[in-house]
Length: 492
Image (cartoon, rainbow, N blue to C red; front, side, top):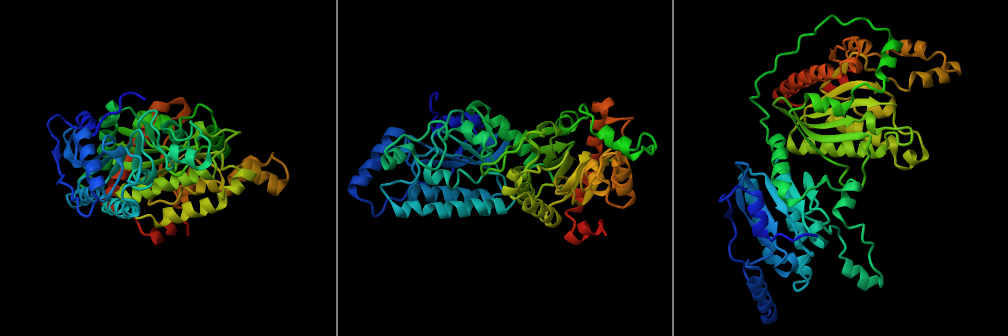
């Protein structure tokens, strides 16, 4: 670890110069022993602050934000009743004033000098954060070295977006406690920012000097206007869509050079802030989750990533749990949700069964049908099986011309019906898998042309898709979410 920034240094680094305004009032110190009062006075003299948390507001890139920052120099950043009171008051004030809240905890956890009365403050702090999020206000967390115990298990783990300092010790159990209890050292590579990122628990590892930039990018999307966005004209189809034969469309969708979600975002998105994992210890490279703007329209973006899905690692139940995190974010923040279908199919394996794949498909379908946020599905390429269907229910469905959706790969359907693979083209035609067929059925609302194939014009194709998404999202933001009945009705 490099030099640990104190609270004032971090505030000075993240907020615009001269914009900090403290919300703190002197802490109440009643009913405490003389010994503990002396310890508190020594901590204040040593650290230059009166408690382990500072709160206030300031400007970050010109945007007003509320801030709560831990101070490790005051009794190792531990949380007692007075610091909990300060935290709760600041969180509640940020909620009342409609401010996004930035939290930068650093702490050894609960203050042992106060014991259980301090320990139970985790409940009040978590309740205040939950109320802030329920009001649709962003809560962004920067975990610093170290963040452990009750702080990590309350306000440190509730962020909409959570990033951490490089090399920071972050986790629940303090290593010294583990060593004392069990007589052996805790593994050194578990409670690190980098390990939490690798396991899908936090979204990024970011040095302090980059915090303002990444948080500003996130807030640009999270606080983008939901209403009053200038209507975006519907893109005019460049040519009448040719009636491409079904098997030809399937074959084109499988080209390895066909653009996927990463190139779509590269060529078509205005802003992209990648997120990572479920936040609960799972991550699947077959899913890309991000905060995104297309034009001025913000969204939570969930894209099946063809580059991350391999024969050795097809999309698993972890990807669906990660997607459901994105659904919750869209609901909490009132943002539209964009799902992208592009998969050879979910994993068919003992591991997927043990991971509850069928249940995750069912829960994804239920969550999407009932989501209290506008929803838009993009069928970008292959759409095999339940893993594809889990991303389909939406208020609006857009499809690339050669995209398709089927219960199994056509080869699998051929094997079941004809006991061979030779009838795959015939089965694809019979099952009406093409985007053109799905549009006739009312399942797809709009088709984006490929001229003649997305793989031959990746940039132009992605830009056309982006224009359609911008148009559809602007309309959805004004219309609001559809009802579960309306979303299900298109399949009647």
